[in-house]
Image (cartoon, rainbow, N blue to C red; front, side, top):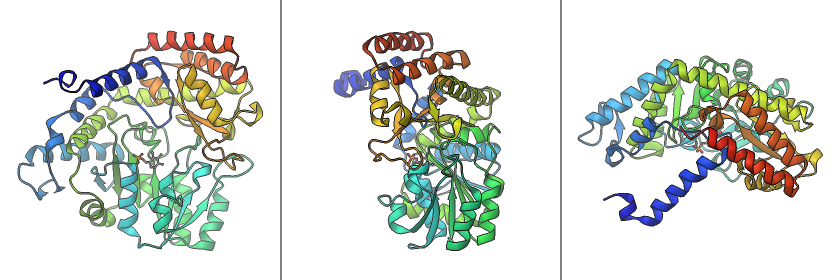
Length: 408
Ligand SMILES: *Cc1c(COP(=O)(O)O)cnc(C)c1O
């Protein structure tokens, strides 16, 4: 029986979501649009299968096809990331981080991570997150002058505190991360180094951001952000941590892997290995940089003054507007973004002084620099002059753009 006939309420919500995505400019930096092949794998029969264990050593019968897709996912991921060992089972980026920390740390160990308010992630030591509850967190931030990572300051903190693990990587950092520099610091203070590339994995995969793999003991990522696959996580590590990582994922922190999602990861990795994907990733960055130029030209301030990757952080203080207000205003004309703290934000995390915007989804819809110019003008117009007239003209322009670039 079709979903529509069986469950009209859910069917209608899914239809409404299809319409919402079609009619909005989705600019949340952590989102993307999967291909129909990825979604087909996600909707496959593998969702029914229990496959605890790893290929060739499962705790359930009937895993021969589960083994094929998991091996394909690992093999393709290894072609992309050239890591000694790869685990594709984490259900999410958070699961990848939990499993990695518990593979190499004891509860209470000292860990250095980037502060959430400066661009880090909840799982890098936020007090309400497992990471902040189970470990002694020493946060590092960005420079007050240029909002960039201050490696000399990070080195000083690391040498003073001697953490067992340093986490690098971020959720809202528009600049390149120097993994080599982090590895020198980790080596000098005797810490392990973990890079969490959840946001930038696709750029790394395409060779457009420096690769952490040669310099880090462990690299974690999501598969659904710039990488453009299903929601999920993945861990890459040096051979010496392979057994500990695998044990920590299963049976340590998860039961049965989501085999439909692993099949979809395999499909995604196959796509990432194509020249089309490399062009896509390169366009994501070009689009973000063009958008940054247009916003800067219109007088809007950007944290760090621009971007090297797929995202921008707008500093709204000079517009006398909060992130919360800007998010609602843009939502009202069909542009979806999220409020985000800026470094050393005077506002509360639920209010904030910034918004984070990213180009992965619009680029997946086929938009290029020319459209970014339009989008930049719409955003700056609305933020600078939120009058009835500006808003209705902006809504029409958004509708025109979304009409020209259907969902893939
Ligand atoms: C998104 C993100 C995660 C978490 O991913 P989930 O799949 O939402 O759990 C972890 N680390 C960083 C840096 C992220 O940006």
